Length: 91
Image (cartoon, rainbow, N blue to C red; front, side):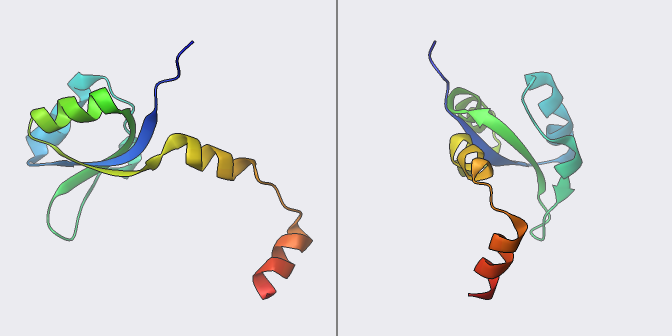
């Protein structure tokens, strides 16, 4: 089984209508993250593969790739006891 690389991204839509139209793409977008940026752009975060990113760019969206999903997942598996964490913060 081939694992498709997925990336945490921020999709920037040119208009409110374009942001709403993202629902038609059936993408893994995080609805609660939809917002208006300081540059007055509409943005939503998601988890997309390269094919999905390319399709959105071709349709006029801007996509900012933040990091590969596997990197974040590995970081979450590093567990520390609370006392160790506190000592680490003090160093």
